[in-house]
Image 1 (cartoon, rainbow, N blue to C red):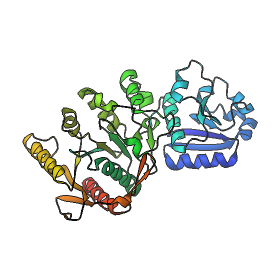
Image 2 (tube, one colour; image 1 turned 60 degrees about the horizontal axis):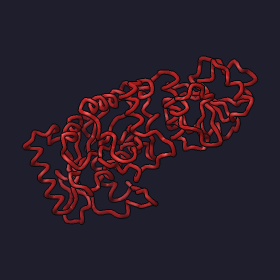
Image 3 (cartoon, one colour; image 1 turned 90 degrees about the horizontal axis):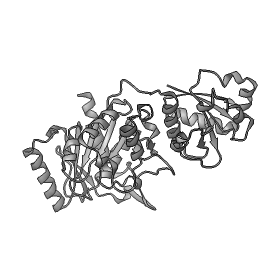
Length: 370
C-alpha cells in the first residue's frame, strides 16, 4: 500500500483528486489536509507515516519553500499550472528540485507519474499475491478480420463487467493501438519500459507497471507504442521469456490479452506456448476461410503448442448466412458499434458486436471454475 499525503490549496480540487485516486487505484492510502493546516503543525511534513506528498500549492508558495528541506524534498511533488518536463527527464538531473506533475492532466496520467515516482523513491512494490495471470491470444492469420477490435473489445468486457485487471499487449509489426486509445502528451512508451527492464535491470522502477501504462475509460491497461516498428518484435526468445515472466510475476493482472501479428512466424509460435487460450479469428469471406483451414491444418500437423480444446473459433463480419454453433462464435456485421472520431475508432460493446464479445468472455471465464 502506497501512503499518499495530499496537501491542498484549492479545497474542491484537493478532495476531487483524492476521491479520484482512491477510486481508481486501490493501492493508495490517501490522507488529505490543507496547506495552512500543515504549516501550523509542520511536524506532519517530517512524519514517516507517508511515502510521498502531493500538493497544488504552486512552486512559488511559502509551502513549496518549506518542502525544500532535504529530508522531505525527494518525497514531495508539486502540481503545476504549466506542463513540466517528463518525470524521467527530471530524474536524470542531478538536482531537479521538487518533482513536478501537470495539475490539469487526466487523473490516469497523474496516477502514472505517481506510480513511476513511488517506485523510484521508495523501492517498494504493490502486489496482490492471490492474483494469478493468464495469457489469452487473439490471432487472425489474414489481415482485416477485426482481431484487434475483438482483442480490445474482450479486454474491455472483462475489465468493466467482470472486474478483471487486464493488460493489452500488441505484437503486431505496426501496432494501431493509438486508433483505440488516447495517450497523453509525453507519456512513457513501451520502449521506455523495455529499456529499464533489460538495459538498466531496474526492478524498483519497472516493478510498478502502472507507471508505464495508460488505462482507457474501461480500466484496461495499455503500453503506448513507439513510432514505427513494434519494439516487442525485436525481442529475442530469452528476452520474451523474461518479459512474460516479469509481467505474470508482477501479480498486477488477471489476464494479459496478446494481439498477435498476422503470421505463424517462429516468434508467434514461441508466444503461443505462454497462452492458456487462443482466439482464432476469420471473417465471412472465401479467402479468409481458406487461410483459416490452412492454419488449422498446420496446427494439427505441426504439433501446435496449444491444444484444440483451448482454442475459441470466431467468425467476424458475418452476413447472416452462418449462425453460431458449438464450434464457432459468429459475430454479425455491425457498423453501428464502430464510430470514427478523427483518427480514432470508438467501439461500442453494448450492441451486436458486444453480444459476440460477451459470448467469448463467458468461455474464457468458464475456465476459472474448471
